[in-house]
Length: 130
Image (cartoon, rainbow, N blue to C red; front, side, top):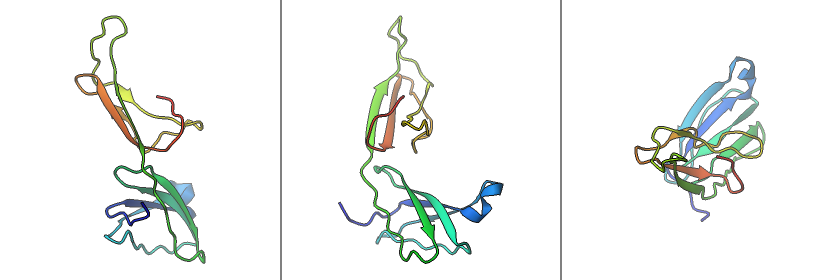
């Protein structure tokens, strides 16, 4: 829509700390879609996530100016896990989505409910493997 997204989570990893699994900083966007963090590093990377939108990576180097990240509406997969022989629902099955690079989406691991149902939301457009 081109409008600011209030309440998006910005997770930043300071690249200077890569060898030690990184230093992570989080911020939440305000009603204007803005956030502010202070980091003493020349290069950072991270992710922006918001309910109903696909996650987006961000990369920033000192001197790049203002960083603008555009989120697109995320896809949703609803499904149901059933026993192949009996057709009975199967609860507590871990369901994940993977793209061509086999990286898990921002959905992480979702467990099927008692009726076997599950929902993966915020998926990046394209083909996924469940």
